[in-house]
Image (cartoon, rainbow, N blue to C red; front, side, top):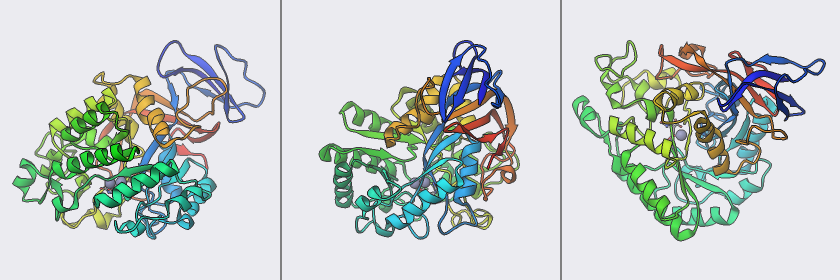
Amino acid sequence: MLIRSVRPYGEGDPVDVLVTDGEIAEIGTSIDAPDDIEVVDGAGAIVLPGFVDMHTHLREPGREDTETIRSGSAAAALGGYTAVFAMANTAPVADNSTVTDNVWRSGREVGLVDVYPVGAVTVGLEGKQLAEMGMMASGAAGVRMFSDDGKCVSDPLLMRRALEYAKGLGVLIAQHAEEPRLTVGAVAHEGPTAARLGLAGWPRAAEESIVVRDALLARDAGARVHICHASTEGTVALLRWAKEQGIAVTAEVTPHHLLLDDSRLLGSGSEASGPGLGAYDAINKVNPPLREERDKVALRQALADGIVDCVATDHAPHAAQEKCCEFAQAKPGMLGLQTALPIIVETMVAPGLLDWRGVARVMSERPAQIVGLTDQGRPIAVGEPANLTLVDPETSWVVHGRELASLSDNTPYESMSMPATVVATLLRGVVTARDGEVTR
Ligand SMILES: NC(=O)N[C@@H](CC(=O)O)C(=O)O
Ligand SMILES: [Zn+2]
Ligand SMILES: [Zn+2]
C-alpha cells in the first residue's frame, strides 16, 4: 500500500509512505507506485503509530451478548488500535492458560487487532490465592500482564507476593485501586453531587490509599506496578511522589475521566450533561466514578507532564437492561474504544496540552513500553512494522451508540460531536479498518 501526502506525527511537509510485506519500505516525496499496489490519498491526514489499549473488556468468554472478541476487535480497529489487552474478569475468569490461550487464539483468528489476554492475579478474582501466573506466562498467549481488574487485590500480603512473583517472571501487575472497606455500597464519587442526589459515596481515599500502599510494596519488592484508571488529584500527587523516589510505578487515565465529571449525574439541567440526559442516568456510572472538575484538571496536566503515563479506554460494554435501571443496581462501565482518540484531541490537543507527537506517546509508545510489546509503538521509519493509524484531524462526527461496532450501546457520548476521525488502521501492513468499516 502507498499512502500519499500524509504527515507523520502531524509534523513537517506531507510525505508518501510505502508499505510492503508488513513493514514501512520507504518514506519520501513522490514515490513511484509499484504495479498493483493500493494507493490511499492521505492529503490532510496525520499518520501515527497504531494505538495500544492496556485496558479493554471484551466479555468473551461468558457474556457474548454484550461483546465478543470479534465485535470488540472491530471497535478497536475502527478506533485506530492495533493492540488491545483483554481484561480477565470474564466468565470463566481468565485465571488459567486454557482461557488465556483461547482468547489469544480467537483474537488471531479474527485478525483485526492483536488481542493480548490479561491473566487474573488471584484464582476466580477472589483475592484469596494467587493464580498460576507462570503457567499463563509460558502458554501460547505468553501472558505479560496480570490484573484482577473489576476488583482490587486488597490483601496487602497477597499483593506483596504477587509483585514478587511478577518480578521473577518479568510480567506486569495492574491494580484496580479501590480499598473495598471504603466503598461498601458506593455508587458515585463522594462529594456534593452524590450528597445532593442521595447516592452512596466512593471517596478519593479508597483509590489513593491503595495507590500509595502498592507503590510502597513495589518499592520494597523492587517490582513494577501499574495503576489502572487513575481518577483523582490525590492519585496524581502520589504518583509524582513515587516517581520522584524512583519507584517503578506507571499509570493510565481513561478518556472519560479526562472529559466528564460527576455533574453529569445531575442530568440535563447541568452544563456538562449531554442532550436529553436525566438525573440518575446510569450511563454515567463507572468505576472509579466520575470525579470533580479539579480532578479532571489534574489528570489532564499529569498526562501532559508524563506523571500519568498513558491513556487506556477501560472499554466496558454492558447490556441495555444492565444500564437502564435503578442507579444503584446498574453495572458500572462505559464504551471507549471508538471515542478515545477524539476525546484526547478535545481534552489534550485542542487546549495545547499535547501535540500529535504527544498523542503518539500516550496512546501508543508508552503503553507498548509498559507492557513490553516490541512491535507496537515503534517509530514511523523505514524497516519498522507497519502498525499505523491514519487520522483526519479536521472532520468531526456525531456519536450514536447503535452505530458503534460494539454489541452494546452504553456510550455516555450519545449525540455528542467528536473532533477527528480515524481514516484507516493498518496491522502489519494489512488494512483492518477504513472509512468507518472493518475490512474482515
Ligand atoms: N470500569 C468499570 O466500571 N467496569 C469494568 C470493571 C473495571 O474496570 O473496574 C467492567 O468490567 O465492567
Ligand atoms: Zn477497574
Ligand atoms: Zn476495567
